[in-house]
Length: 405
View 1 (cartoon, rainbow, N blue to C red):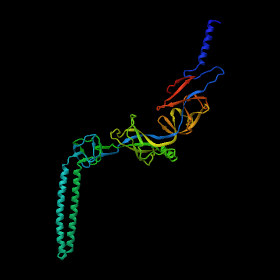
View 2 (spheres, helix red, strand yellow):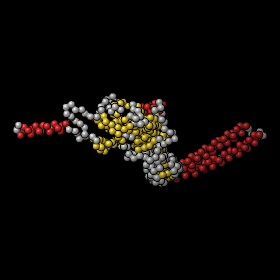
View 3 (tube, rainbow, N blue to C red):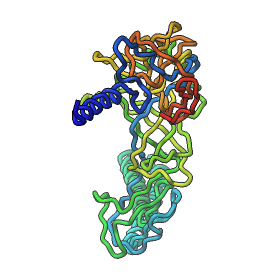
């Protein structure tokens, strides 16, 4: 055989040797004729049931606790703006002062008209008293007495009208000083000094918002509402304590809001267009972190699920029909594929309420290389709070710490 033929044969046998060797992960790829593939090493954790808190994450929008738009009730020119934009005001604080010259004059005229009416009433009362005495002695006719009584009643009515006009003039004069109807934070003034304003105009002069406490409006589907009620009625969901703070917020920057909130309102109507209903929660807002219009995510405490299991998300898959499936290490060293029932999620885990039992060994690593009934070699593992599997992997008799998976 020539040296070229010997070199070719050597190359062929080298390629066969590489193909029959182990891959980088230590899994046997190809063995000699008649050889057998050994059990696949998998990471497992023991399952144990416990009460698991159940919550729902809902989108929400921050809404002011109360809002008041300030509008004038009389016509006039703005003489003075008495507040600082963006400051806190209390109910009754002065916001604007209008030119009150004509209103003072109108008040003085109404006061004079009232005095005139009072004098007329006094004169008619005296006339009636005299006529009544004369009528008692038949010195005047009954018609004369009736006329005197009618004139007195007209004078009294005119006096009441004059008194009402004076009250109206007083109200109009008082309305030249525009006060805050509620306490809160007052916004930007929409008018300036010297501007002409009109009674009950469409545009508000300023807006006051109460933001401590503050509301958050949440939205959920009616289907979720029915499902939660069914679970609570069936005993699969324990109700939260009514006295407990049950709602927490996550802000737009993914930071948790430090204050807890409580449910204050649930609309008893479902939207005909979206199929959703509204919940309203109330939060303390002393530092004004929450501002009207902000979008937030709310986590609503629904209670706890008794005797549930926490299954890492990585260990659960879905079948072609959408069923939740997990691999369990059986006592005889086989991988068993099981269908389980889920009831939501908690952090990096699925909440499983059926299909597994206490003590079952859940396969959390290596399940990519197995199928139902495959031979396996379970290795005890642990999972950190991020869902990363830590385990001890072995090659033959030499132990080596496994990397995070």
